[in-house]
Image (cartoon, rainbow, N blue to C red):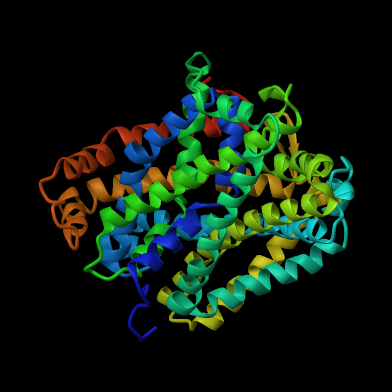
Length: 473
């Protein structure tokens, strides 16, 4: 690629695009459920602490590496390590991981689109049927919705950084914020909604244990798109005069604000229509809550706002989640596309075509692994459980390799690239960063306790996921 590196057109565009990558299904649904199950306000407090004291330094490390090299993760690791073969492994992991995450995330986005269409066409009763989800994901409809999702993603990415990713973020993210606020206001006006607010905001520190701490840290780390190569790639699209520390803080703040606000939407809604519900009754997964639990809530809403009102509320919710999913999917998929453009000198269109074809094949394999094809449904067994191809992709790339990638970037900037280079890059465009307390904290944390924490998470994930032995509660 002989042309100069693409760049975001404005600081706002970068912040919205980075926030779009961070704000996803986990923020809108996973975080509220985690809070409900793990001490309400206490979980929220720990989440915020981890975002700003653990995750923010990792984000700064990724962004600084990207801007310094003006390259994708593979090129960045290669350039700064002087083409060390050992560190090239970290570069490849940072390219393969987001691609494989895009594989399963695209399938979930397809499901969301299907439910959005169902809600918009007034089919709430069918959506709330306990058997509907299983029937839907094994129906031929998913292939039609997959074409639509991939087409939307292609239209955004083919426009490039400024005309594609940035323009889409400037449209979708404000729309997402306004819809979220609107849904919160609507939900809080319902009967008994304040019971959910009370449960959500009043801390119950008696529920805090090592498992809850680990859950809050994992939620914070994953929700900020760390370890996926996204922040390295997006960092490479920032000009040298940009304030990386200031921008990263705004991204982290936006992510936390959305997660917090989503809690004000989900939990009051649940308590409003089921006042006696217990936290343990909530689904363990975001997928379960979105596709099996919440449709029942929207169906029950008909008694107070009527059929049309309930359908509108459900449609807005699924549109909200769809926007969050698309912005995240676009950010994730940009990483391998950018790598092909930079490392293989491909045009954006050719890189999109190649990555898109591979994505279609693997996404189809995931989509049909819920009973359509037996081989992919019972693809593998470990820790005493049979796993589908979809399950394996999530376990390996989302649950396991993400914290490993975070560990590697911390070790890389601290001991290969060196902390003084990290500080110099972060100080460029950020007046007052040099010699500040924040600079000292970033240098110390990235090189000491953050890698230890991520190493513990990685080891515990491996032993739990694949051997059924939890080292941490």
